[in-house]
Length: 347
Image 1: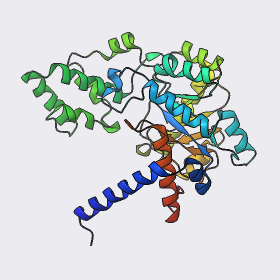
Image 2: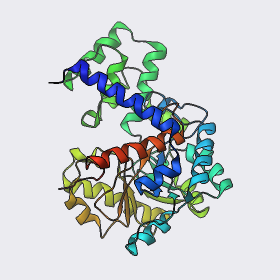
Image 3: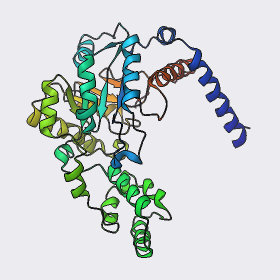
Image 4: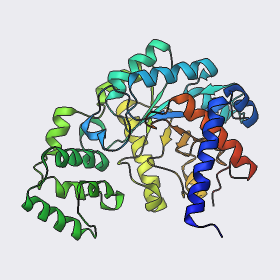
């Protein structure tokens, strides 16, 4: 029987071994061994500044890291647009060359300010997945609110009265509050809690949206579309799909697509899951296949049984460079294939 100490040792040994393989492995060999010629790296934010609404959520990819990643992609792969992927699906063919498809989730303003000019200069296409509830800074994803609240607590601390009020409002949501880190425990199930906390901390989310404008506007999206970038649905309000009924999953997906069609004249119907597609049933894909042309998950390098659904690779891994992330994904894929875990199973 393996105890916790043994398991920790095994995981550490596997991690160290993989690190050595990543360092010395050749990317072209990994592509050939795996048979995976298409990779789909995706980002949220590229910036040399760390916005308060992102700061406490995940690492920011700086411009240098982003450019180095693009250098790596362009050296080993050809850039594909969503149209080229869509054509392979319609022709029932696999991508037959080393290729990458680039996308950005959440429709954040830094894409317009930072990433788009770099991609245009290099001639690289990309797709932006937006939440219709947040376009034009009408509202904000609750996780961004959490980061703002975290920053407020770290910068100014709490008075005894504020801490008491925080403890009470958390208790009403069956949560404990002991420190600022507990704010990060707010989940999709408690997504309204940041709005209850904001008045306690004298935080005004509406003022923040008006001043900082974290999201892309309709005008910016139209301009990006005119420059060749494609725009897709990331759901209406970024919910955790496994917690939704299938009918609500469909509504979140399709309503955002309708918004894009009406307001931005988007023709090709592209959809990327917020969070993850883990646990989403096969029946969901059967129901949306007349509404969605291409859809995308976040499970890394894996084969999906749904022919119009592709798994993407998260690229925000702190100091890890794109080369290391991609090579690690290939090694994991090869290892998982040995035990039959390289394909996603849906029921």
